[in-house]
Length: 139
Image (tube, rainbow, N blue to C red; front, side, top):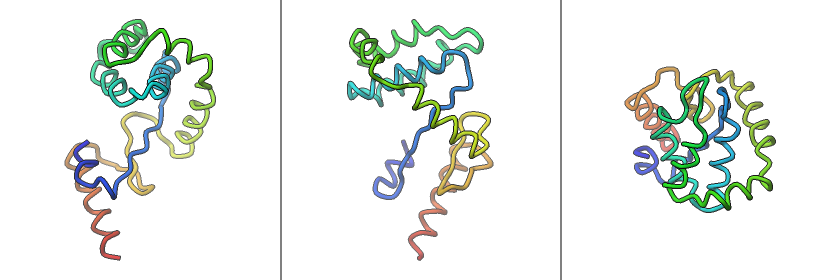
């Protein structure tokens, strides 16, 4: 958010789903249903913030994920109906293809203008973005 706030006209965030764990497909369904209800950001942020509670490796509690999404503004009843119209499989297939193409094997993974960030951390991300912005502006 800090990077996007500093460079609102120069930085674009692209989020890819990385369904590495059991229950990932349903979690993606929750998020995509939230997109249809225009509550994508609050639902995504709530699920990410509380991920340690609902996404225990090997034993995800998707009922809790739905409850967290509801608290963030998702109409769960409508979302579950909308899931019949969302092709989550095709969304995941495309993202999995991108993951394979880019050799992503964990999250988070960041790319800046196609270059993978090799060292993770807020400072490293900020420095890499600042360097790319400076490079583009110097052209």
